[in-house]
Image (cartoon, rainbow, N blue to C red; front, side, top):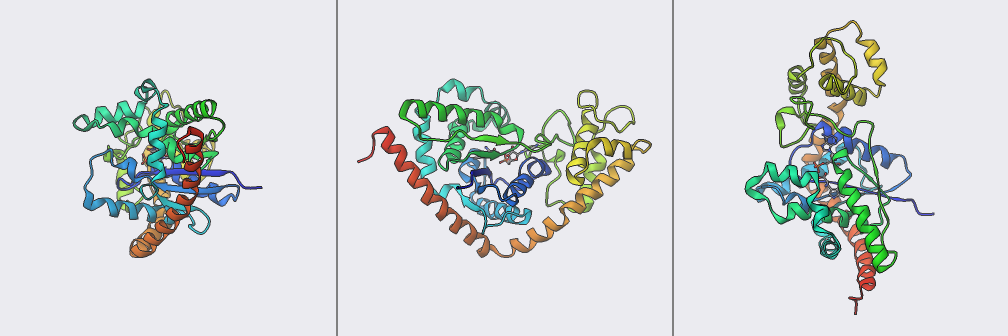
Length: 329
Ligand code: AMP
Ligand code: TRP
């Protein structure tokens, strides 16, 4: 029997932060290594065009993200690593799906509302139809599982709605994908524990490329709650709870054990250890990424060959879709 398909994607918009890593990328690697899935990981460059960008920098951001994938442990011999824009079927299916997507469904999307508020001078139509392209990315490959952070659940729900709608209108064609979340699917900003860690607010981020000194400085500066107890309580102590979850994720240790360990310790002792743990955890990643970045042609080859493999599958699916719609000759 064929293994179920697992698929995800990340936008090439610059450096990844530890929220991307703990919420998504580290899980891509674990799931790949479980051997239970056939994995496809995209660099979703078309999605990234919805935010302001410098064309001169785009290629670098794309190759850097391939380096991030490989440095984290994605194995191109085992998983397909592909560039979304190289596969025209994604854009074509997006159009087709847009004709069965109610505008109201898109208007409800939290990410659209957030991004429109953040980039008032550039509220483009792509920002609005972004979730349809994401649905196309997923269902073109019959993906059954999609590992993502919590902020993408609403988009996946829309994907599932579109699958049901298409299948009931035109006959069973697509698979309804299920999300896979990590233990910590929503990492909060270090400077504001009420907001998720996000590239658009770099002060609250730990980037995967940060040096140990930068990590130490950022964790030291992280806001804390009133009181001095190191205890998990998301409602009353959101800041320390966020740091405890980060600790738990990088040390792979349950939170109660960490609370016990720091019962009579201070915030500053806890923070110093957390910073050291993060730096240590990311050290092999940083070293591997640096090496990979010096091998641009290797990174390009990974993408070219992965995109070819993905395109073959996508074209086949799109042909089936056109037949179902009655638009094939
Ligand atoms: P993006 O950079 O928006 O393409 O996001 C890449 C992946 O990281 C997606 O699966 C997001 O859900 C996930 N992600 C982004 N920010 C966070 C966060 N603060 N906590 C957990 N996961 C996140
Ligand atoms: N929308 C996702 C994000 O902002 C990225 C994405 C695009 C994606 N296509 C996808 C994620 C397909 C999973 C599957 O993070």
